[in-house]
Image (cartoon, rainbow, N blue to C red; front, side):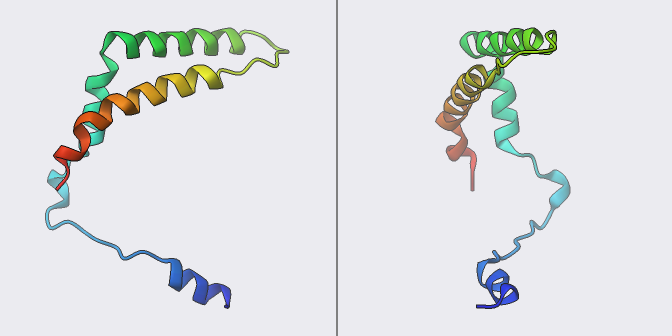
Length: 88
């Protein structure tokens, strides 16, 4: 299969809303709400502390991936409880 044909085969249809100006992503609003919860806020603080520590050193092998994954996983878990009920 030629590359152009493959792209045509794999492309998804584009759907546009009737009134794009009034659209609000419910996931964004839910993430903002979930970020204020105590345990998620503390995970974000832990990630920021790690990030500051890593950025303050010139030679380090430490990364903050574990802290980032913990924070994002908990945030997504919180959002998932009510996101799909808000979708049409």
